[in-house]
Image (cartoon, rainbow, N blue to C red):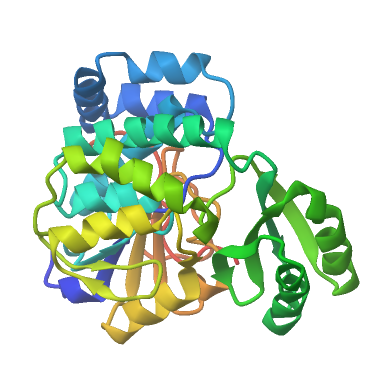
Length: 334
């Protein structure tokens, strides 16, 4: 590594989206450090993660979540060796990315992070099979914040659940609400010139899920020890600086009931001198939205073959060690 300042670089672990099995399988089989981490995950859980992921239904199964976590951590390790001029001095992980962040900064041992991810997935699946079965999380873009607040305020005034689950950019929202209220919200989005994107089940990030937070703490996180992180973590909820194991633990638990606020996270990173963010993991969102690309040089590192975005300098990995599995230098299109 050269003499670039670590404090100017942050490691970002993306929130989880639908992830193709083929890309992760190829990455795991061709890149030795990824193969090693998947073997360690198999040992921690007592089953072959990739085999279960291959056969699983749905985009967010326990096995898909574990595979996503392992892939993100392997990519971060590879990026430190091959794609970055210095080791990052800060870390953040919006939404699901907080699990990878906890392992990356050493608050959790890798095996514990894998076990936690699997157990939290089971806990949430059981909870939502019994509770809040009508709730979904709907994402949309191109709606002014004032208009979005007015639409949601009309629902909450009637005693309906209408919580901002994620603020991805100035005009990019994910909202948790009843499926019965979704047609009316979509109508309002269209009237405001916005665009509905997709609807997720199960839902996420709402104060309505306080009992899920309690279950997750009692059944999963109480079984783990959280160490002091080796570098600070920026909260994706309010941009605060987390420097203790207890704070990292609470970050993961609060993810059930607090919204993810990416623009605020970006501002917190900028305030601490970050100029470059490495987005380590399968990502089509956090490394691409204007909130990110306007303010940082973005180094996206994913499990696919390298794809150069824009007229980036120094686009190729520094060596072929680890195989061709995905470096994109420069800022991705918003």
